[in-house]
Length: 152
Image 1 (tube, helix red, strand yellow):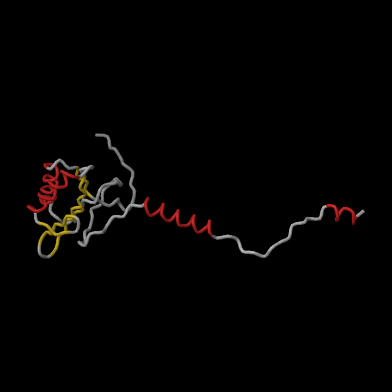
Image 2 (cartoon, rainbow, N blue to C red):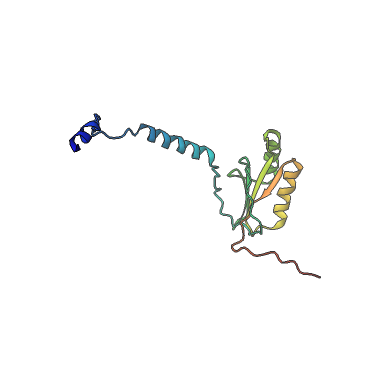
């Protein structure tokens, strides 16, 4: 009986010692790589070293690459627009050009925390006169604190 059972259920498949096909796995890897490269935002870091001030609320905004960097150096205040050093007059012209061909109309200002408010206010005012939205770059606070409302 034992021989009859083993003979009736014997498989006719033969095991072949071949390696699995890696082509679909490699294709999937490249598709995922392409997805992550296109989905990530590449923000180019400016050549000027800037210490951003800390504020209470973090924000993430997707914008075009119109970045004004204001740094406090030994020679005074340096202003760069998209990594090109400019003065206030050239910056005004650049902002007017951006307002004509930008579809979002947004400019990011990355100002050193040691730069006087007067310079930052002038830059923001120029951008607003050119009908652009201004975003001031800041860092989130190092520690999260609760907001406490005191009764007066």
